[in-house]
Image (cartoon, rainbow, N blue to C red; front, side):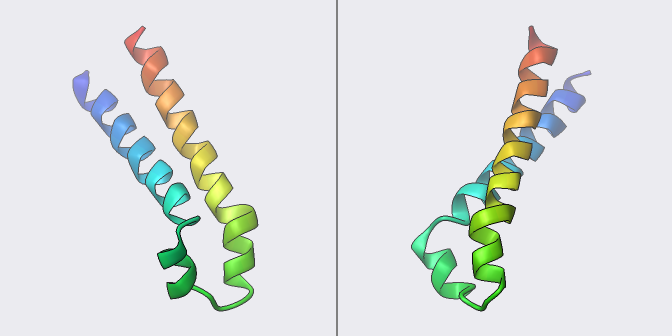
Amino acid sequence: GWWLTLIGVALAAVFLGRGVIGYTERWRATFSVEPFATLDRKNYSPICIALGVGYLLLVIMRLI
C-alpha cells in the first residue's frame, strides 16, 4: 500500500541527506579525525548517495 511508498521515500531522503551532508564544510569541521574523514569522503558519502538513488528508483518504479 501507500505506507511502503512512504517508507521508500523516507529511506531515500535519509540516505541522500546523509550523502550530501558528508560533503559540507560544517561536516568536515565536525568530523575531521582521520581515517574517518578520508573514508567518509571517498566511501561512505558516495555509498549513501547511491543507496538513496536506489531507493528513489524503487519508489518511482512502484508508482509507474
